[in-house]
Figure (tube, one colour):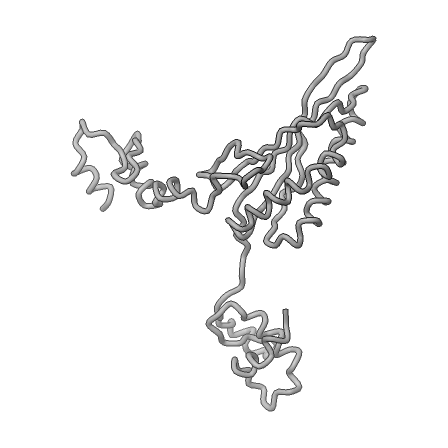
Length: 250
């Protein structure tokens, strides 16, 4: 119906563009998809994207992709450092400051570090150089107290990759660390929620704890019943029984 409506409203000479964001399209079908998905709203707000960096930060927002859901913050090296671990430790406070800022904005992130490294090689007195990029594993982070764990794992990833690169090369050595990219994306972890009715096969076994509830604590209630089952006078597991023990669990 929407496509039919657009065909009627748009004459042959009318430009095919969105009435909200005025973006032009090559066909009515593409415009229809744009309107259904509310892309103009997503693009203007950037979802939950970050369009700035903390004050006095050494990082700058260098690029973004996927409608700003993936963003890259860049730190250009000012010092002549030729060791990746030393570089990370030197800039740890700057990196942590950026991460804290991002967590305040997005609450949950996926972070990947990428290091641009300059290598040199001396072949018969002739110095040659080349650049290479090394990335860490992309890891989720939802609380700053886990930053150190993520930080040192990422250092280990990159240091291992650099060592393997030099071992496979022919005399290449690290001359300097050129820049660091912190690649950040919004992370939406899966959460348990609501009550799902058990299939008859499982229900008849009477071996699965399944508390009827309307919040996101279904797993917690199941744990409570399994731990405090001896205190139950009957085999009927009620929500009111579980709620007495909620505060005992982290």
